[in-house]
Length: 104
Image 1 (tube, rainbow, N blue to C red):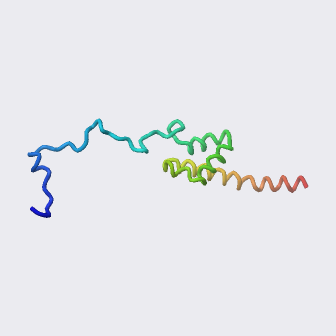
Image 2 (cartoon, rainbow, N blue to C red; image 1 turned 90 degrees about the vertical axis):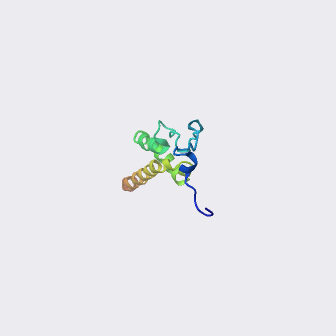
Image 3 (tube, rainbow, N blue to C red; image 1 turned 180 degrees about the vertical axis):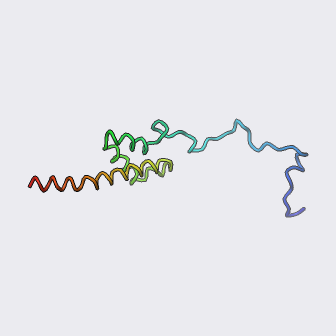
């Protein structure tokens, strides 16, 4: 028997052995709900950014500051806010350049 694995069923005489106590359940770091109504700071900032666009800038700063390393579930929402800021800046750049040209 040296070097061979022993079957667990032999020791328990046909019954299963309890590996862990049900009351000894440890929650993981991703079992906790996300902070802002369960959707996370990123998605909350993205949705609230339609009413208050500076929230997109806040989430973009968090995204480029690697806030999502604390909780990877935040990455998608923060990325969506960063995309919203970039598209907002790209769409408003021609308008701003026309305003500057007309004011001169």
